[in-house]
Length: 264
Length: 325
Image (cartoon, rainbow over all chains, first blue to last red; front, side, top):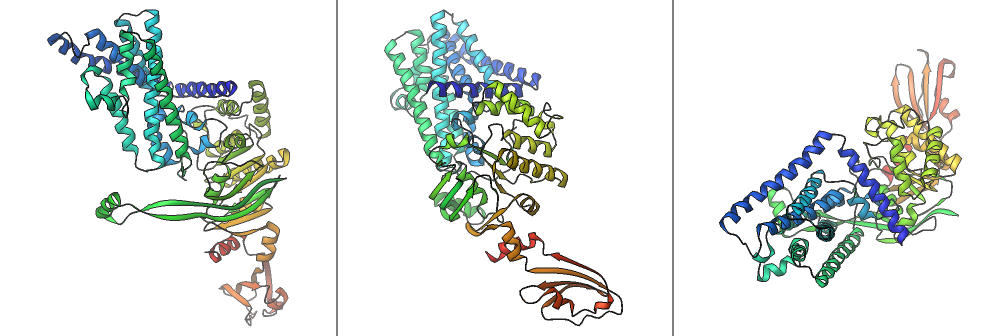
């Protein structure tokens, strides 16, 4: 089994390496995409500066905590989009019949498909995330925890994309579900978890699991709790298992197509 | 051993139907209706190891669907498939190590990479170690004359060179069966001929079983010894090329050029296809008469030139398609 995982990992690394090479063909575009994403995220912080000038505490969060929250939101988004950009357009891969190429290869179809393209601007998000971490004061344990939570949160982001994209196996026009779920995950991730109460809070820990992507990790970075961290890791494993199950369940309904397709 | 064994294979697609106009769009959103399209209706056939088989049929006949089921892309709704003894629905990955696929309409290569890098990537996909991949690339490069462009990015190659690389990429893991779906689509005659040579060479040197679909009858005529014709999801014909020609080539086309004083008396079993002055193009049905009998209706002493040809294979296949509608 470990040999299999090693082989899969080799393919993902190669695929990512070649995808980076493709994006680097136009270096100016590559660098400006990364730079402007960092700038875009920084501009979002301005509204919080204004708010904190009026109030020193928002839903129990200080300004430093907001920076950490933004870092976590951008990092999880960046991780998922940088390595697995195609997961966020899985719907079109399914409808266009683009899974054919991966289905005839002796590798994991889902992994091969979603790692075939990188999100260049997402690299900007990842860099932004670590800038935020530095601004809030970095220690080695905090750095390691932050990185771990970027991975767990990124996996949950990825899982939601795979689940919503997999609806296309059943309903052909489900790209709207894919887009909406992606937007919802981003929108809720950039607010302090404490402002959401009651049913909304329940939804944010279930259907739109932003709670496990930013709220809980930020909470853990501020007040560490081993039990909660283990729950967080278990939840991310649960989500990716569910997403994988749904994808392979749907794959039996895959109908391919005869569209002319080039791998560009 | 059978390379492929297909029994009573079935596949049905559910297609959404929609009435015309905006009203129809809303109606189909509120109350969607579907119809079933039987793409493959219980076909059965076997393919021997090392065989070069043409699997042909008009557009929408069910060729690609069948190939996709045999390669593990689509799940069948009924029947069974064994490719090299492997069930594609249960052991897709295991099967993938043993087969190669080239879909003329779909590109597998990364266009920004050179063929060399692409081959290395495919080598990694099939778990071949680096040294072995290098050796195989060198061998394939020499065998299929890729030397000139092996280090040129795929996007800068001509269509013919690209297809050649697509085929070679599918050979890197030395598959026992190669599925070629329209490999010569959009290529000029010279390149087509090169691709055909390459396919022949593969079959001869590696004993690769070739399962070919093509709308180009020359591909079939020049490469295949056996042909399966499918139409409307049903098997219409499964025979050797030789039998196909003998059984269906029961008509001959004769071009006759006569002097001005020559006479043609006519014959019920001779069909005049074209006449210009004293030049005739006739069709003789050998089931009804012989060439000798047919020629008696012409003034033999006035014949200046004569040319007897078979009905083109393309016409035969078109007739079979039409009959099976």
